[in-house]
Image (cartoon, rainbow, N blue to C red; front, side, top):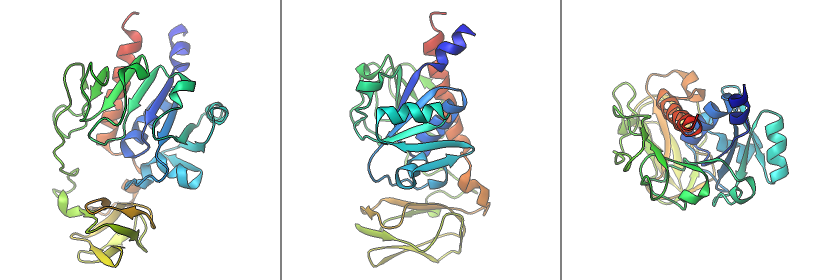
Length: 272
């Protein structure tokens, strides 16, 4: 019981609020850690059904029974924790760490490069995926590639290079993902969960249509009205057509979150 109380007192700061960061936050919150997320002012998450960054726009977001709430101060962080919810704050530099003094900091921005995370940020700093080096940027890394090492805790070196290949569903990868054909303002009348036919116009970037290559369920789609760059991922289609997947954490994300939990327990129990 003494160990359980000590672990529950730990503060974990997660940089990012997208699908990967949200799966990690969900797992850690359910494990009774105090978790806080930081995000950019206008997140562009595609898998919004399972992304806590939606709370930045809507005030709160529920993912599989666990709620995140938008906050703007340290006092609000502690209030949300007292409600057994997850606070998320607009704080791109994660400067709140200087006030929270987290035991653990997790960089789950998924930028494929380090955007400022340092070894000195916390006693345990965890990098998610490529872009980090153990001992230089972070203490450990959790593998994100869909390989035999998915979810592995890496204690030396770096994660595998990003393949750029989307998660395969029914054997389809690139064909089921929508990308921006140009820079401009994104607009769509579609909603996550809508049925999509092959060849159907799903959205526009400026006046340029974005057309689906395959049919199925619109599993993810960025928010209407966001400005995007050419090549930005705009959405993805699940060709199997199961609407519930839009609001369920994927097995890959659970594996990554499990690796994070393993890394935390390795750190906390090493001297026990």
